[in-house]
Length: 295
Image 1 (cartoon, helix red, strand yellow):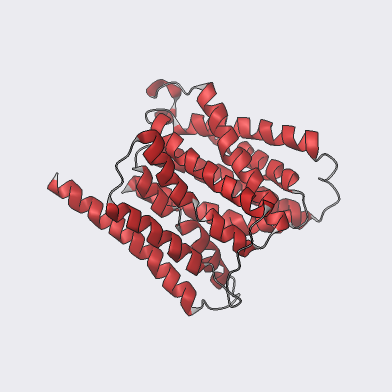
Image 2: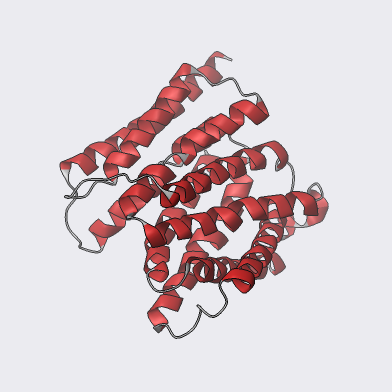
């Protein structure tokens, strides 16, 4: 149960980072925002790494491969975040919501290809039900519209990388120190983000209002620092299909946040979407407990 709670906390944190990143990227370039959020998250993770409890000292875990950390850093946050930010600069949030919801489907895809997981029918149903619910939960009064172009390809690429990251942590992250992995992963992501910004975008990082930089930095706290440590620990211990279902929590957090901030009551479509997501998680948890009891 602890692992599932950690995963849900990570999804909520990622969900909170989305409106902050969206605000920042309205003024900053995609590369500048990616560098700001990843480096801010890396700073927090570094502090946590230096002050980590004794139980998370490296001697009690397997060695964290620098090659694995470099790979994860490129996948997520790395280029997954960069592609997502590029997508938000040229398209509507509606298109982004629909395509980013596909990370659940790509997680199942990578699990079947790389892990050779046997995907039960109820797990496929739960994933699809969750994707539908997350999409419905993202409807506003004007509905959703999907446009296909370079922007859509950016979001699609981001979803592919997020799914790959989830399965890679499951495949290679078991038994290694989640804090050390997060530290090295964020270190490489910062290097990649800085290199991309310096080569292709330098000069688009100054002259903005303070609130933009604050939003960008906070998106790194909620989008990098807090969730990655929890995700690296829990995803290595939970079946990838179950992680895929929990991904559908992320877009709903934005709707809940809007309600808390007094931006209007939810529509009936959003309520139905939320119920779909809850139903998908219930199906997954109930069937998993039933199978464990039979075993």
